[in-house]
Length: 507
Image (tube, rainbow, N blue to C red; front, side, top):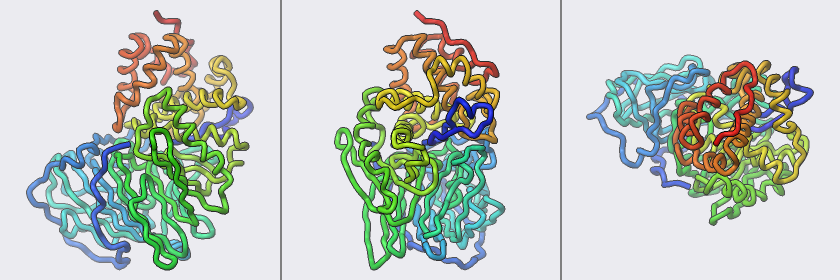
């Protein structure tokens, strides 16, 4: 997420609020074919049935996850559902603000089931659903969709197809941040659409297991009308325009958590470029809001700078989609970024915030927190890199020195937001998960020396590449990469109510 001025009274005089944020790989299977729009009529459907249990196909093995019941936001996602591939077909009518969708979802159940539940926004009504080709009875309650199935056996693979339509609406964010009041599908007065959805909100535009521990491949076909263009993560596979309607297919080559998906409809232009090693870059912008483009075109330099410290960029493409709103998100392989430079007060701050989202490709995207209690595992490491980048581009540092943070601001953040590993769940994306965690990393660097610390920092994304991790994984990793005192120091730092002292110099 982006970083903004804090609204917390206790730290307003000394801190800027760090917003939550958020990157090549083997191809996923092609999206199953289906019509580009769904029936809007209500159809009662009998219970589905299943054939002989099917194990997970080899082409989906890279997407096998181990979902959990999230400790912070347990109402979103279920632990028994492991989605493997989403084939999304989305048709957006800007005048009526009507979204029609077909979601073809390949999944694995981890336990025996006769029902399965998805997150799906209440404004979106399901007209038909099948499980393994058989009609399935469906029930919608609030932001949940439950399908009745025949007996599904543990570790078996299944295909669900859901037809739905409606006028999507965002949901309140569990946050006090000014730039993060609503989550999910949002629209403008002119019928453009975009999304910010961390820690949840993908369910406002497609049926999903909306939790960070479940990663899946994605293929999406977006149909836009009235001269608009649809945008999604990954690379364009094909695009066809007929009159004022354009249908574009996208492919995301590595599994992604749902909060890392993005979508936009609008008067978009597509600019391409090359990054390090010939990396394909995609810049999507609306000509009426192209002010950030000179900064965006510095993407190759930003990625090259990060690669020197973190290793090769981990995905098949990179880039950005510029949208309305006031924030930024590390959406995988295609950052979602506000098109308003002044939302960050200056071009220099905008540049460092955009770089922050790109750095999430290593921390948050390639390695994703298993549970939202470990948001710091994504944000602290990324902000630590942003702090370095600010020095690299000689931008004034509005957060002060690490010495200042250690002496004053860290305690203010702990008092206001809680410690970084036990933050207030009603204030997602508060300062503590960014700045306090970055200070912890700085203290480790001082204790173990730059050479050893930098090797450990670079090695972490590779240790759990394309998967999930939690604090226990990080602590265990540091004990081996740095030394036996690193893990206990991190464990204490994450939950201490009082700012711990810097770690002594280690041999």
